Length: 635
Image 1 (spheres, rainbow, N blue to C red):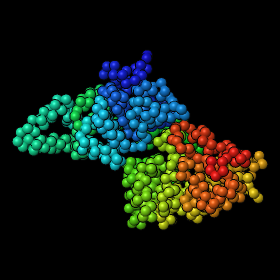
Image 2: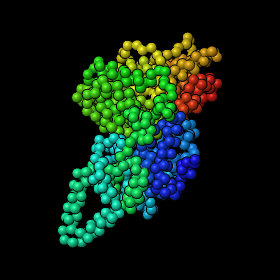
Image 3: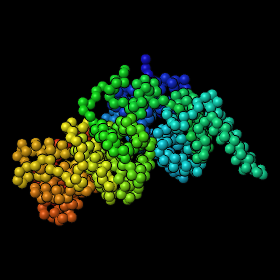
């Protein structure tokens, strides 16, 4: 029997369906998402929970004329399927395939590119204002998850939208919000009444009439307060009403026919409206509904029938080792506290939360607050550790500088997912942390080459008088034997592979690229090429003596890092060489790192190979220098 979904090649095909077919279409979309995520991984729970919202939006609105702006984009898989990408959906998150998040270059239906939270309302309001100024038609809808509403930027957007009073529709996809509402008959009745065309016309007419009579404005204000007071008894909407929005809800976010009807009514509403929809993450797929970790973020490579992972890593990840080391530090020192921004599972802090609940803080998707909160803790003698993905710490850059580094406060930043992250792609690559942190005064920046070094560096950071950052990658650790932790000498690198006499090339490596450099050196040794390998350990302060001495010893220097070349560790080495006048001595330098472009999604090993950051790439760079093919100074 043919599926309804097989005939859907765009939103216009959705609109041609009778309303009674919409629930069946939702179930087919849900089955397709589960099937593809089982083989590709992805954000399963969020997307399953938003299927009916997505179908109803495309049924009621006319994308791309009407702009649908998704917050984060975790929940937008159904949107991709319905907007001409059904046949390509099996390629999602794979090299050369669909991106895991909305991306403007991928489809005109992706109104705004996104991968970080709390941006949709601000972006949607900007689109609405641009259209108003240009006299262009069309509605703008922002779809925001409850997690994104913990970010201050979302409320900045709400505040401005309420002040301007534009016809913006915000859909709040609420699956576990703390303002959990009373979804009862009375609440549902009020919601339908407050969304109806009749009520909207009545509201408009009453306001117009009262504006013409004596004391009319005071009467309008009294009526408005009365309606708000009534809503406050049965809904949580008074918060949004206070920001200038007309609140509708809560409504059943899985009643696709009811949602479509409500969206059609709201499409003609004047002024800013917030529709509060209650949904369930992982809806329709029991493993995703029942497992809190799954519901929170997703499943990777799982059996469709059971939801169980197809395979498990044989070794611990870097995140596992960090979490264990942090718990040990918290055990040793009661001043150590842990902070994360809605990523307890992702950063491994769930372990700390279980063992030290009073000293582990999840502040929600609020990285700026997390950093300044840590600064306040440090002011009073605590030793805070902010565990955050490299890409997300970018959101708190001013706080790093102004609230932490400027005051020299002892806050430790543990940057997970530094470097290439694979399938999550452009928005999540940890490409820039070395560059954006290296220029900040008072900040020590470290990069461990294995899990043992990670433990030493965390121990070191927690004993410094000022702030420090350490970055480590996503994925399986190296499997080294762990030693008792010890503090490292700040600003001192180490030679991890030496050769007697004069080497042919010196390779200075950072973090995870140290192992690739050593492997390349061992291969080149079999070819008769002598290579010395330096592990920087500290990108700031840089061990200038070691770098310059080893570079002069060979006359050829290769730097390799899994971060942006612009302003990164290789640039720091060039600065040190230039300051000592060594670049004019005939020294040849080749820098390997991430180029000046955003790296799309793919498999990490393939990406490293393509970017010449693996063993083959390092070996090739060394051979090129020996052959004299690298430019003098910086390549």
